[in-house]
Image 1 (cartoon, rainbow, N blue to C red):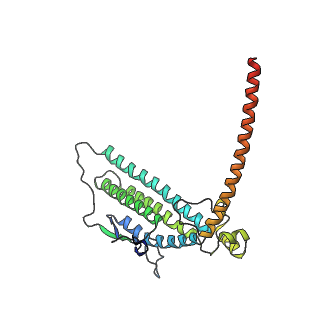
Image 2 (cartoon, helix red, strand yellow):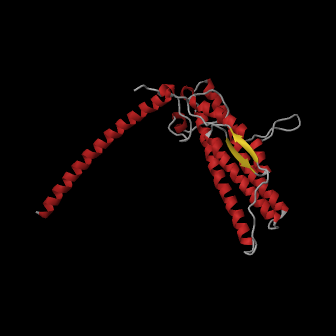
Image 3 (cartoon, rainbow, N blue to C red):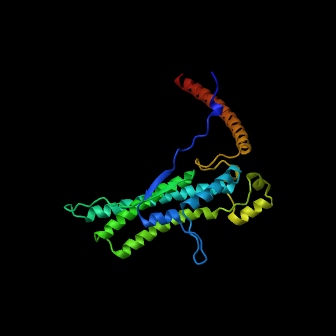
Length: 267
């Protein structure tokens, strides 16, 4: 049988993934804003993902700070998800409690939603896309509540601003990472590159310096680092095995002593 695996092409989507955005706040969060002479730029989701790609490449080059900031961004998205779930549940419950049973509300949607292609391959990016779609649903519910007179205009705008600000706070987490080209070997040697990284981003926990503390969704470390971690793990396993053997011997002696004492008591 002929081996054809070497001729197989890499797997890729045959067309773009697309999402529909029904509200302006969600679209603003997606697009961001280009920097002009009169206005500063605002980071959107594609820009966020571009920076995350650089972060992921630095992880592959054994930068411990990149590993740390990847985990921090992921944690920020998790907290954002919890906050948005609570916001959506609150507004849905509020509408349910305040609309009379005799009133039938229509499904709220945009007559002309904006369809945008998702052209990035980033786990963190997709995690944020899911949150953006939640924002769209929250905004629709808020606009409905405002339309039927359940909330004041001031409350509407305050809620929309709060949700948008919360998402932007997570988007801007990528700015906390500064690329220095530092590696774990540099950190161990405490060379000039390591000192510059510490100056810009502070000290790191030992787990990140060693590569043992990481996000499970982070890109793989370079093979040289994996080999080092494998050797350290092997040593650890040997020590654990030796320790387990000692413990087993002690337990055996203890069992023998207890059995002897029990026999003497019975006699």
